[in-house]
Length: 190
Image (spheres, helix red, strand yellow):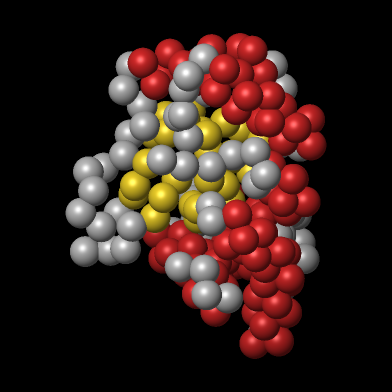
């Protein structure tokens, strides 16, 4: 079995049952509407609920969402789905139970498809160093807070370098996730 990772009060991995996660469709900055959706999801059987966190407005709203849930007696773990911005991930980590990052856009930003014309070991090393620089502060904060991170990869958001190296392929998705996982492991966050 794998090791147990806690997302709030929900154990994930090891011999635990599969945790059911869903995602809200409300605007996260509307804390009342988002808390209402989370309550409905929890009442329907969701163990965790993910919310989109595109910027600081949504990050700050997560504090109010958690307060509203606690006021209603709900301990449902909230997962922040981060878009592009490491500093937003650092902020929202204070308010949620788990942070989801996408390796394809967490450190690399917007793809232009004209930056890379060849891939050398130096370019790969520089890119991996930039990823580590962006990711380590979040790793350290989550370790300190004893909170989980999900490395969530999908075809639509692979980095330009990974796309150049592997194309839009399952191998590229695995390579992208493993780069982040190896950084986490290197910094004893696993």
